[in-house]
Length: 258
Length: 253
Ligand code: HEM
Ligand code: SF4
Ligand code: FES
Image (cartoon, rainbow over all chains, first blue to last red; front, side, top):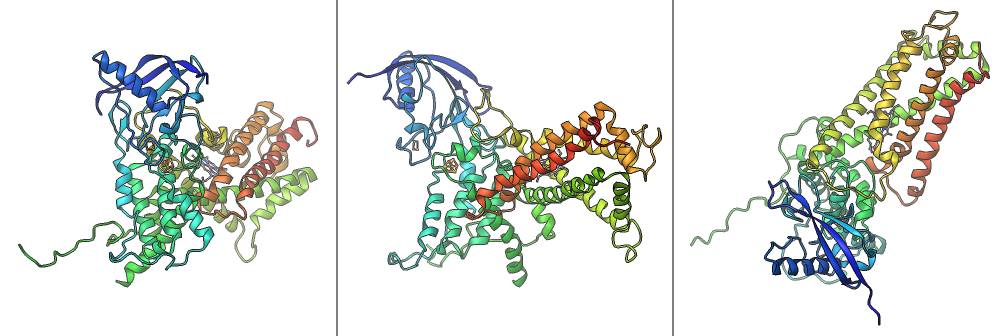
């Protein structure tokens, strides 16, 4: 089998810490196999930098199989690069042409401060999940499977929303740094299922209010969904908006009964 | 070590709802999602206005008498149950309020969005879905706003309309005022351009309202874009036909 090799030029964002100004640094990658993943290419570059006694480029990664949501990177102006429905760790060099120049930037949002180079702090997502992205269930023995009937279409829709891996590409891709797709996915996942009903409206209000503390506002561009490696649909945003409106009414009613 | 169960504080936001709240509408408007509701609702009100405004103006094609009578008719809505012009003024006040709300929401969300990305991307973005319309909402909105101001000065107050009926602006001579104004080609051109931008604003806006209001249903989702484009097309074609008709002489005094 003949292997295709490529020569690439990388323009990588380097930034020493949160307050450093940062700059692009150019590196040439000579004859690297087509079958290398994008992150493997950065590994190769980092090996070289370390050999040359230079500082390795800091970037986030963990599972490298597209399921953990740790990897990031704005690649040539697209979150997770040019291939649809694909995380950066699952992107391969076959998606690029020989002699391409590839520009690599970190996610940019005020809520995602840069830690170093390409690594950002996505703790704002944790704050949102802590505010309501769970069900408060009593602990005890595991319930029997299928004890709570869930209609198949509902289970499917909830599962589609649950596919969100919390990577933050939606925020990075959004011209407004809005997190509506992420929060919409979390709310939809739980609010569609019977198990999520008890806290449905508390959750909707708490999570959206928490989102408001960190992120911008949705103008329905649709960039988030296009960038999302799990292809979360804009439908989740509409459901979130609807539940938030209902929550404002219902939670008040409950409060006045206390 | 104490064996007493420690008193459990609510760990989460879901367990504890805030004790005091502002009035419902203010509470909603205080959040970004609530402001989008305001934007969508005021947008619908403005869409209703531009549609009926356009339909009413087609009376121009029936001649001066019909159009001038229509203007009189608007003053006599619900007359004699309500005094003359009272309903018209209520409608005008409502419309101005809606416009103010739309502008305030647009303004404050734009400020919020700027803060949400204080350091911008340093390399070019490669947008996938964002359209010309969605990305120019603010620009098209501002041009439409300037246009509304000019339009009122031109055909309502006559301040910039020195040509009206027989060289003077006469409020009740609606038909003559319109025709004389559009006979000035730069004015006609501005009307056409502003309305094309209104159309652009609506191709995104009239789709966007469904998302903002949480109206999402597989049964009609496919129609949302078609509705937005169709609505924008009807309004724009109707509106720009007037200055064009005057320019090419179909409508004249
Ligand atoms: C006749 C006048 C106008 C009509 C019919 C109209 C209609 C609409 C509609 C239906 C929306 C969608 C609301 C939503 O996304 O939920 C919208 C959004 C918007 N409008 Fe207007 N508008 C008008 C004037 C203006 C003006 C004067 C401005 C001034 C700056 C403006 C700025 C905006 C902005 C920034 C948005 C948000 C964009 C987005 O959601 O993507 N509009 N407008
Ligand atoms: S919605 Fe998609 S893009 Fe956003 S955090 Fe979840 S998986 Fe990532
Ligand atoms: S590293 Fe886990 S999803 Fe990319």
